[in-house]
Image (cartoon, rainbow, N blue to C red; front, side, top):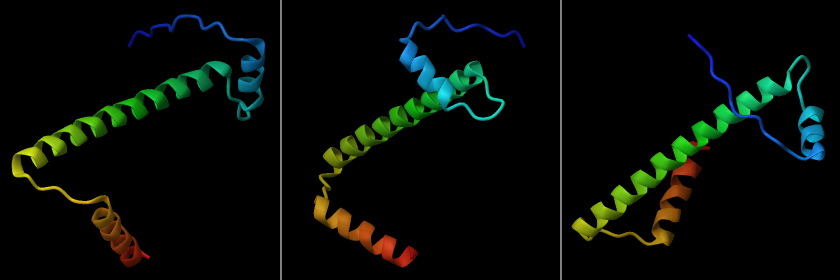
Length: 85
């Protein structure tokens, strides 16, 4: 598979120094940036999916006229948590 490049990123010297200061043994700045990019892409995809599920849930609640108070939801989550312990 052919590889592609990411555009050069201009940052302040302090940011570059901070990034280099946290590199693991044998890790390069390039591999750190690649991992950061992959992690943020994954996080944003999860975030987008979460929003889609929330909107679908909202729409379903409007259709069914079935709503729950925050207190009842938190109480149920507390019960689930206590049972899991």
